[in-house]
Image: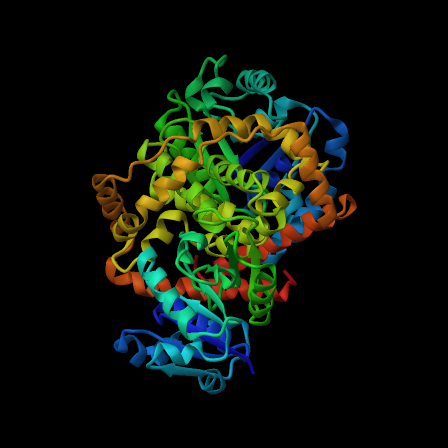
Length: 308
Length: 308
């Protein structure tokens, strides 16, 4: 059995732990906050409910694969990889990476769950930068199989290949960026769409309800199975080349118009909050989050059944 | 029973016909191309296969609701709405709208399936612009329930409300733009994402395969159920306001970086074609399109079962 260290046991850390432990990894979990650690198995129980929708899960076995650790050094011993999921703050990440480097073997991969920060910055103060990377999951990582590996220019090829293998063995689908960029692929795609959604709303073209519908009742149904390039390939009789040749003038024109930077003023954010609360009470958000996880798990099941 | 006219009987027109006829509308179909008309019911058979996945369909009844017409005037008589789905060309659309206006009652709504053109342009030469609009579906409209209504400033409130009712009765989910803009909501959101996908690929950050994975194995699974604003609402403990306040600096920074305009040169499009053909042979595209429609229908079924 292979060891994985989890550093930071919030929701992301717990999701990682469940993802690895349900695939026979031996998982060692550390957090500097003892309250989080003492509630950890309660969180695991909740997350396992989603997992059961698309996977045979023996909850006792899964839990027996997880060990809670009071000391950072315990998650460093003999781990193939340490998955860091603490707060999204560069200085805090740099500090914890120095600690992890100090206590772990030079063969242990150090991976940050950061959704935005560059691996070259996170590993700036390390002696051995070749074993450091960002490995950013998609929320929630116990049901969404995605992880994007962003190496710095110092990360070694061998470390990237080893990390890919570890994630694949845990049933994740890893992608690898060829060079680093803020926001990586997932948040850059998401940000491009979100900024346009905000332009359309703030400039008075459509309501938040109608924009959400455009995604969930149209674009999102296709995107659950096909990426943008695959979709373009099916959009014209001659394939992707035909498709881009037909539509390029329109797509380019949109790009020219979509270059304003929404300001996200406090006033605008307050307006969003008011409009959203008319649709969903604050007290109903937790229930909706649970439903979200269930729905994602059901689509994952459907995709697995359909060989996708 | 209520009458609907379908003008242009290609794949979009046929999908509309199936969508309306499977919801008890009386559908009159016209195309200037007689070959298309003579193959029409074969296309209907194929489309109905997808429909059966999420809906009880009596194929004979469905077909009996569709009448093929040799003359444009036949689809104009007593129709509540005429759905135009001819080629995406402004002059052609203007010409056909003049014909439709001439032969139909002033109460008949004239709706274009255009994915990009402004309703004010399409209706430019009409005497009665108040009954004209764009009603853009999402591909393929016999399984995807979405339609975006884009009125011009001349379209009357009553016509918009009547159109919404017609589409709702046919089990579509209509949204209404508050003012016209090229690409409407769907293609503006899609274009923003596509342009960023191309930037990431063309500038060497990721492969088309890895970009597609980011969508279909991560973002798309969530977006099949939740729009961008709903997702932000669940992304931070305090809801959408909390979420945007936490992440606005990152999102703004992305908007500042995502303003280059991809050129879509012939050379780049050729490169896309080469890379895509390594993944999927041209001869396998049709099969993949069928699978796409099936998968969309399965997600639609899942959503209906889950009350989404």
